[in-house]
Length: 122
Image 1: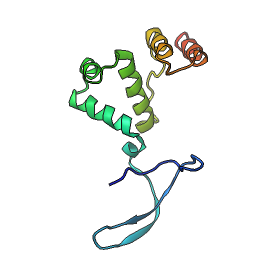
Image 2: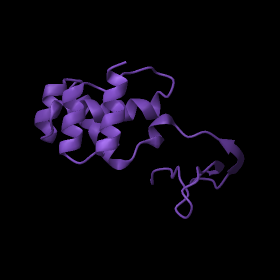
Image 3: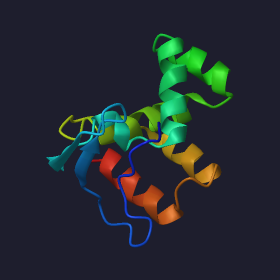
Image 4: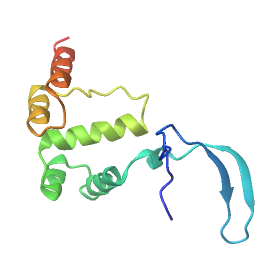
C-alpha cells in the first residue's frame, strides 16, 4: 500500500482525501476525510521513528544506530513532534550547541541560526 500524499505534486498545496475504496468488494465512499497524523511523516521520518522505538526512546542508542549526533536526534524528534502534535509546546530552538551543529552540518543558514539564538536568549 502506498503512503497517502499530503501535498499536490504540481503546486505543493495541501491535498484532501475525498474518496475511499474497498479493494475486496469495490465499495466506494465519497466525502472529506482526515489523514492519520503519522501519514504526515515522510519516509526518512518514519525510518527515524522506527529506530527510535526499537531503541526504546534511548537517544544515545539512536545516535549509535543511525550514526548521528545527540543534537541531530533531538532536532529530528522535535521536527516529528511538530508534525504529529502541533498543539504541543516543546522547545524547538534547543541550546547553543545544537544551533552551532546545525550551522556546521548545513541544515540551517546563518540567518536562521541568529533567529534561533535570539529566541534562546529571551
